[in-house]
Image (cartoon, rainbow, N blue to C red):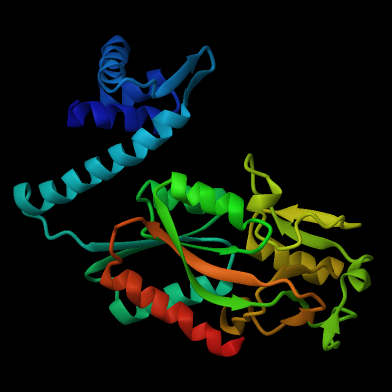
Length: 301
């Protein structure tokens, strides 16, 4: 196994095409195919499925690519520091479900450390991709929730991916809506009162299982349901359609504005907000500081 072979398979996975990868790498396609074949024979797994529509990664290949990316990235850092004598920036990346408080904590982290010596990235994304990002070293930390419904399934997936979940805080369930909504002035809202209004849910793509839903009570038979891909669209739908979504109840007005509110849902359901990290890997100082910023939101619950 060589570093060159690892770079080859990463490029193929990113382009999803053997021909495109060969062009990107400036090598002949038969030579690339032979190098991948030799690597697969050496490690005893098939990294890719090949068809006339291109290539796709096998489950075993996905796991191998996670380690391959980590090795190539670490080598690049060593090369920059000791061979090319570059002073590389320290990096911090986080992946999160669509939580405003997670983004707000990221903003505060960047303000504290600045961008002269650090390179930051935040990925507000689907549940499965949060897990994959941490598993494949794209992010140091992943922010998501567990509850009685999804805990067993997701915890098993964490363990299989070499990840560990740690609780940050627990919270009840709130109805998030714009302040002009007919029910916005109530102290509590029952699900039955929401039947005539559209419920908003974040689209989970190909991993669209109830267990990956970002909203609790995902198996409830909503009379009206709209799926969307991003938080800005959900906010617009709240205003335009008197729609709502279910959330943790933590409001960040300086990011979403002051036109929205969270009203307690009449339910005993509990969300456990926590973070994912690689098992056995210690948090960086930036990672720990980021979690410290998130923990500050417990006071608002």
